[in-house]
Length: 129
Image (tube, rainbow, N blue to C red; front, side, top):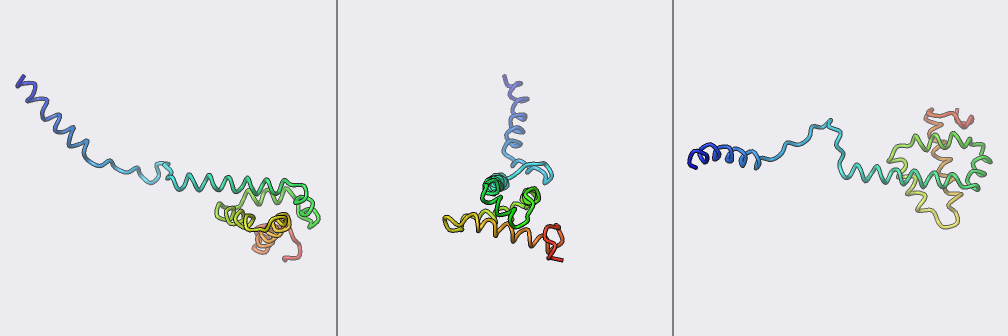
């Protein structure tokens, strides 16, 4: 029994010491995401769905067509928005008064299209050149 304890004791001590050391953090490029990043991605997807639902309404589409805006171009631009821009647009849609959401949303989309056109990122409005 003493012989077994003599060989087993150092192994148990080493296991105890190694088990009590802190685990090394994963390297930066390991592909792990934080909880904040996961929640932000989920919120960004929800914001995009709200914007797409608004743009799918008939009255909104009629107003966009009346302004001479191509619906496919609007969808492409909404898809190209960053998460921060999507959150800002969704927050603006929440702050609109009840009953005026279509007009306010159209105005928000028009302003976004106008700004991207002035910056030269798109070519929707000919009067911006």
